[in-house]
Amino acid sequence: MENTYIINTHSHANMLRETNIDKAIKNAQDEKIITIVPSSTAEDIFEVNEFIQKYNDVYGYVGVFPEEVKTFTDKTLSDMENIIRTNKKIIGIGEIGLDYYWDKSFKELQKEVFIKQIEFANQMNLPLNIHSREAHLDTLEILKKYNKNSTAILHCFSGSLEFAKECIKEGIYIALGGVVTFKNAVKAKEVAAEIPLDNLLLETDDPYLAPVPFRGKENQPMYVKYVAEEIAKLRHTTTDEIAKATTQNAERIFNFNAK
Ligand code: NI
Image (cartoon, rainbow, N blue to C red):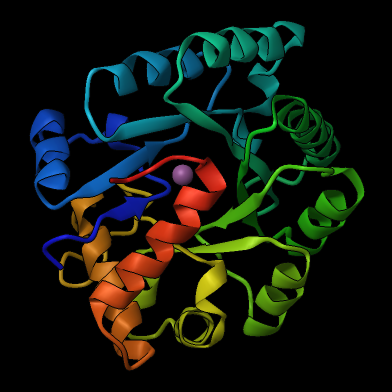
């Protein structure tokens, strides 16, 4: 593991509460983990922009999360564009998508804002980091219809193996986090074991969903290595192979070198 970088493609390191943020980032840097931080609202795109400039090996996405689409205004895309133009460490659009779990009352608005952000990512030629919860079919349908040239990543993938395969056919990447380490996560383990390595990415979604052996505690970026270890076990291979393959995938998508 000594020489292999791991790319954590989705971490809200800026939202850690119980863990000291500087220390959590240092833990990740010491383990050669590169962390990519999404934004959630039209306001915190500015916060993420500042946050990621403070640390080495930390990058960001700008985007408005489905539960926060009411914060999205006409000005949001031009704010995002200004940030992208001035900060080279913004390497994608996210997290964006659809979430029908909490509140179905503004589905149409969620779809509208999702589509606008896909079209924007296409213009900027940046990848998409997508949140999809209880909205798998609509998410795939919208991507098929509106996404022209951005690589799409389904973050914290929660679908079946069959659905994963359908997505992979469309060139979509599957990002897996701490859930794969949960004993009862049968579907996620199956996806982790069976999908082609070329379509796999790693993440934590911290501060949520800490992997075993930290399940129930606050998650942090470096715990992505437990995700890699579990996936290696499920695939009867080494953690190093998982790290290498997923890092190569991320380098290709984000067009950077982990070095
Ligand atoms: Ni998230």
